[in-house]
Amino acid sequence: MHLKTHTYNLELKNTFRISHTSRDFQPTLIVELSDGHFTGYGEAAATSYYGVTVEGMAEKIMSLENVILEHLHKTPEELWEITAPYLQDNSFAQCALDIAMHDLHGKRNNLPLYKMWGLSLENIPLSNYTIGIDTAEKMVQKIEEFPWPLYKIKLGTDHDVELVKELRKHTDAVFRVDANAAWTAQQTIENSVLLKDLNVEFLEQPLAVKDEEGMAEVYKNSVLPVIADESCITEADVDKCARYFHGINIKLTKCGGLTPARRMISRGRELGLKIMVGCMTESTVGISAIGHLLPLLDYVDMDGGMLIKNDIADGVKVYDGKTHFPDRNGTGVELYENLNK
Image (cartoon, rainbow, N blue to C red; front, side, top):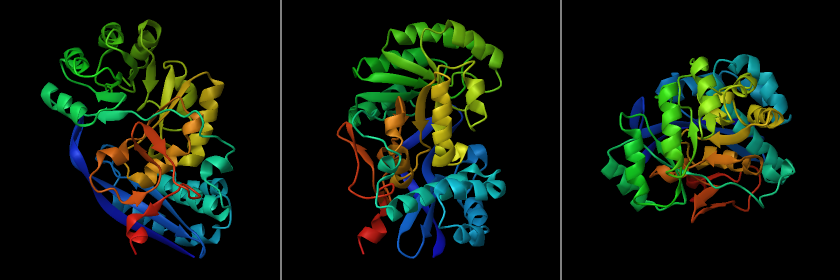
C-alpha cells in the first residue's frame, strides 16, 4: 500500500482571464493511492483566489498517511468521514483524496463509477467550452479556432452586452454567461433582457456573494435563470441558494470531492434546483471524476482538458461534440507517463 502526491504545471492554450484574475499556467496536485493491487488517482488544482497551493495540499494529505492507509479497505464515503475532521479547512486536498479513493474503489470492484452508482450514459449533457475575457477580436478568434455548439462566455467589463453582440455575429452556438460576481442587481436585470434575445441560456453568479438583497431582486425580475457559483461552495449553501437562484454550480474542489457533491446534487433536486458541476481547469484526472456525475446533471462545465496544452492523463475526454468514456473501471484515468512505459 502507498500514498503519493505529484505536482504538475498545466500550460493553458490561451491566457485565461475572468473578472478578477488572469493566468497562463495552472499548478495542479495529483494524489496516487494504491492498495497493492489497484491504484487510484485524484486531482485538485491550486488557486490563489482561495489561497490554495499544491505544496500546502500535498503536505496536508501526506500528514494523514497513516490514517488514510489504515482505512484504505473502507468505502470512499467512509474514508471521507474519517478524514473530514483533519481536512475541514482544506476542501481542495480533501477533493483530491476523495477522487483517488473513488477511482481505487471502482477499480477494486471492477466497475466504472457511474455503473457502481446505478447510472446510465444514455442522456447526458454536453460540456460548454469557456471563452475568457479578452478583446472582442481575440474572443472571436478563440471561437473560430474552436467551433463548439455551447460556449460559456466570461464577462465583467464595462461593455459586456456589446461583447456578446459581437460574438453572436460569428456563431449560432448557445451562450452561457458567467459574470463572476461583477454586476449589480440592476445591471443583471437589464442585461438579462438583452442577453435573452442573443440566445443566452442562463446567467452564472452575476452578483457578489454577500449581496443577498440584490439577488432577491434578480431572482424575482431576471428573464433568464440565474445559477449560483461562488454562492454555492459547501453542502450548507444549497438550501440558502434555493431562495435566490434557479440552480447551483457545484465545484468538486470547493465542496471536498465526489462524496459531498453527490449529496449536494440530491439536496438540490429535492429543492427543485437545476444542477450543474463545474471545473477549475483540472487535467483529465479531475475532469474524468466529473464525467461520471453527468447522468445526474442538467448542465456541465468540464472543459479543463480542452483548455490545456499538456494534459497529463487519458480518461474521460470531450471532443467532436461528445463526451467519450474509456473502457476502464473507476474514473477511467491512467497517467500518460504510465501508459508510455
